[in-house]
Length: 441
Image (cartoon, rainbow, N blue to C red; front, top):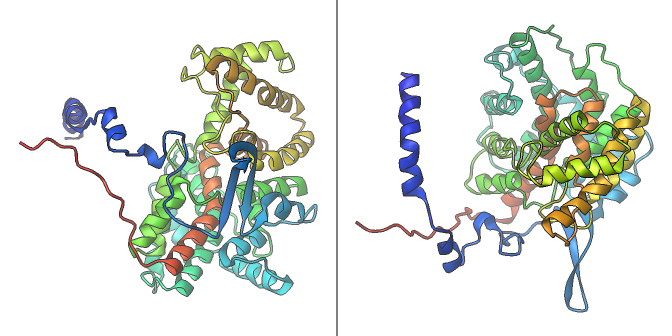
């Protein structure tokens, strides 16, 4: 039956394409911004938020001028938040409190919040065996989403959408996400790849970053540098302005009155899309291809020549994209990449990966020039945070199957903050308008 259905749907694809096609001119005629972006690529204003802010340009003498990118969390520059942490201090929990509550915690508030995160880092009895280990899959995001929806069955107040109940649910999910990801991956490699199974219990006294490294490794060991770099990566991926696809999904589903578990599951489904959360995987695939075709990583002429082939659609996936370069909002620089780069260099030195780092640094320098020359794009092209994040995950021994899940482990904080803000600020359902252009028959 499945093969017959496959054959039928392949035949019907052309019918769908013929009847669902809308002429591009109609979008311009009716002033419809596809993808909620205007003709200049600026996002259509759909809401207000007090959680975060992105700055990519400033008005100088009445003119819009590109500037180095800025990312703000609750009124603080992200560079300052990370810079104010101690050299070995894990800041994920502290910054999570800031995003959720709207203010930095004092010493006692931070201690209490960390205590709740640690104590909630557990799953219901037999949940790992009965849910996560059943039907394991390479798609860890799907595995996590299944688990998130199932967790609702263990919550007597799953449908309670009061702010206090949703805050409690969000804190629990923030705590549980590392377990859902790592256990889901361990089940997959055991049942599908015939690898050895190990399930470590989390340590409530450790930070999120430390627990992640401990849970993923058979010997449970990690260095202070590894933990600090991962902690920084998680902070930088926590939140990004509110206008991204998965956060907007969180807002839309929240506005319908749906429960926390369904809302976060919807956000997960958005994030797993390759146009959103999978960018660092494409960077890693591209870098592997470059390594296979460039013999001397420090030879800038050789590196530039191969980048030109990629841009000319003659190499790699032949789409003409240098992945990790450019951003929908930032032009001169991505503030997350600027902050992250210092930690990447520290980790590369510890891991003996300086040669790979040279290649990344040369691409960072040369790709904007190649793209500008080939595409005649002069507004500015700079590396984004995804350019280095895959390299970091690789150095930490994190498998590719977990890359997008790592993004989710961080972004659950931002989603939670936006869900709570949506609940507090409006009781209206988000209902966009679509104009029908069908022919009456």
